[in-house]
Amino acid sequence: MIDAIIILTFIVVGATLGFHSVELLPFSALAQVENLEGLRWVTTGFGSLIGVGVGLAAQTTYRRAESGIKKLPTDVLFSRSIGLVLGLIVANLMLAPIFLLPIPSELSFLKPTAALLGSIMFSYSGLSLADTHGRTLLRLINPNSMETMLLAEGTLKPAPAKILDTSSIIDGRVEELVNTGFLEGQILVPQFVLQELQNIADASNDQKRSRGRRGLDILNRLQENYPQRIIIHPADYDDVATVDAKLVRLAQDINGSLVTNDYNLNKVASLQKVQVLNVNDLAQVLRPVYLPGDSLDLKILKEGKEPDQGVGYLSDGTMVVVEEGSPFVGDEVPVVVTSALQTSAGRMIFARPRMSAPA
Image: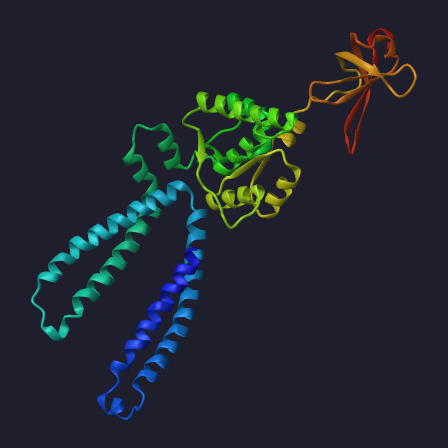
């Protein structure tokens, strides 16, 4: 929307200047023009075309500046803003006496020229000083804040905001990550994700309805326990159709991290250079590693495909095939790991009951 506004503004300005530029022509030239209104429309058209070119250049410059500002760390952006404001204040204080000097009318253009050049010069000086002494400036603003001091020294970097998608909320493990402190920083729940959760909770399918209500209950608990960290973000994108595309767009706009369990969303976001925190990947990394000879207590739930085999599962869902385990179906028995196999579908562990394991 802002792109169209910028271009249209320059088109209108160019057309207006072209329309009135006829009045700047010498009187002798105007006297030779037979159709003055036609000439006005021609200069208006040329002015509009020039406005389109200038508007496109201004729109490109604006987008580049916006992209550069979004990539700046918060502390640098804050210190530069203060430096810019201080530079403009100093410029106005220094230039005020100039406007009181008596200047001939022929040189009246010197006052606005001096004001413009002075503002640019002092603004640049303020930005340069902010880059050099910004850390000290942060300490002066809040000297009693340990976090501010660490930020000022560069020891602590602010954690990017975490954006939760629907799958990670319904999964529920994100709640434990927040409770244990492994998920730090601000946690954002976009309004369109909340709407999707509500739609799932209102679904006619019982399974979908229970999943949606579970997600809403988890969000309510998180908001009660961490009211300062859990924020419902109002951003929405009417020009984007899907929730996944909106999540990626929001993460790019605020330079945040996306928390999800969705495999496809993970791939799409990674391709667009968005940092993704996948809870399934974390669970995979944190799975316990059992080596041959390790012992564990396992409940054998069913018989295996081969005779005398029993099958049980670890708490993370890893299948354990127990040789000579079929007589113990329904019981929890100590087993000894004999080998482990990694397949494309996951990991599988082979074991046998401890009492029958060879010494």
